[in-house]
Image (tube, rainbow, N blue to C red; front, side, top):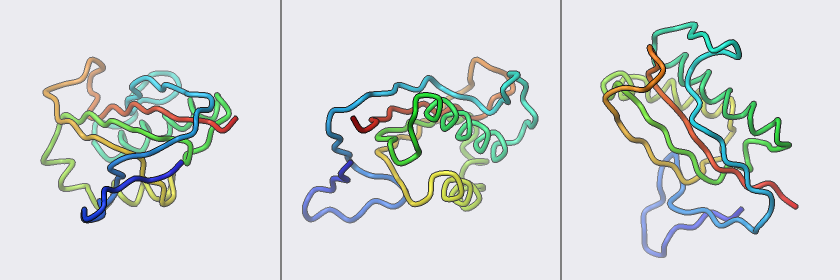
Length: 131
């Protein structure tokens, strides 16, 4: 994959403006919330739910034969903007521990609530596996 930043733009921090991937096997990962494999939330807090949701994304990706660096796009839906802003540094540490320094094209959308209560965050992703 190739990270794309238009000429003259300041480099983004913690995401990519664009990602170019050679056609390979595409993996579409449905929205993953912060519950465990038994669909039980172990915490009501944003940070542990973010970590679990990202682990869930990576588990689906691994089941398809992929690795974190194959993710080209990730969208996060979060119900608690103040909690997210307060936890940005810790969220970044979780990201680097699980994803390394790979930052795909990302969007973060704040929503009023998620389907699965007491979910605070949901992550969905698209990955491109090499041929």
